[in-house]
Length: 476
Image 1 (cartoon, one colour):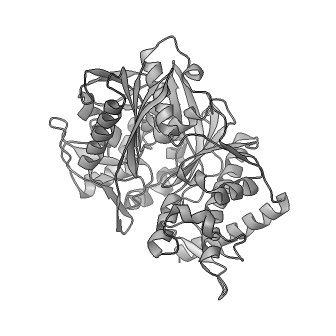
Image 2 (spheres, rainbow, N blue to C red):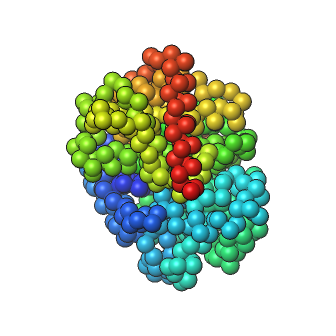
Image 3 (spheres, rainbow, N blue to C red):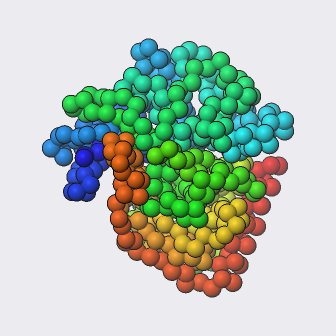
């Protein structure tokens, strides 16, 4: 059984042909670049997204010698657009999950509806999620056609279906989290109650077929990118956790079949619905991880990610970095927040800045991990990690130190695609269990804490003070 597993992400599209016997048979990647336009605007060309899916998929199939049994797709989760359901033509640019312009939709709703939205949807009323973006598109860009997340559009272009998977729907603010259905009341809160809505499907459901990559093949195995990585890394039981270090960093803690509502500002979503069972997770986000490294590169501090470990100082020399370059998410939910470099002196040089940026990313993730642990009622005893920045030994060691727990590095850079490949197998084979569809793996590296608990607490304490200073300035 060969699966074409496609991971359509913020910075690129990756396509893998995966065979349970042969492993990864072929890989193809296509870059896509979001446009950061100022004023909180982050957009992508929908046609470029589609072209990247088609090109990467076709190249992977060709390199594998052709012949696939199913196409599975992971998506960005909260990126949206308006489009014509008859022709498939876009009516707007894709508004990326990082885009914060829908704060104008959220702000007047928070006092009256914030608690209710959190109770019903499991999410915080924030422009990060898709429903405010959908409403913003309707208000400012287009009143034509339908307005959906990008997965619905891509699947429609491939198959003609009008669907979204339950994990993606749970990132919208308008899904009843407990029932797994669209919530008519919440749709009304955002003025979306008259919109045509895609059918919600399970993550292991066949939704149609496509000839886009050669001979006709079924399409099944749809999910958001982050829980796809949770699956690949074997975080199937309550209490297990992973963090992906991509454009942003995303920490997910499995809560099992219990949709735990956070007491401290985290969000709860559907991880997947497969084999008739729904699993949930708590998550926290760092909006700028690899994008903070790109910022350092654009400033000329480093020439690229490969410079991180070579240039990073052994100590930040008191310099602190708050990675709020695109706002701060959980548990603060402050889209108006900005990034900050604090504790600078005349002796601060580029190596201290590099170290401060890496420790700032690690500190925010450690802070989120402690917050998830509070909601779970148990500590995160080890963290599984994936993504490009796991190649930085300095960052991974800082993560283990600040978390005070071992960090296991996933041995493949393709966690999301491999997770969606497992769902593609489930879609074709009714007798297969999810655990059986996941490839066994051992960490390429495990980082054990080297700093003492006291040292970690001291650095985290200073970092939290930096966050409070940044938030106070942003609210002024």
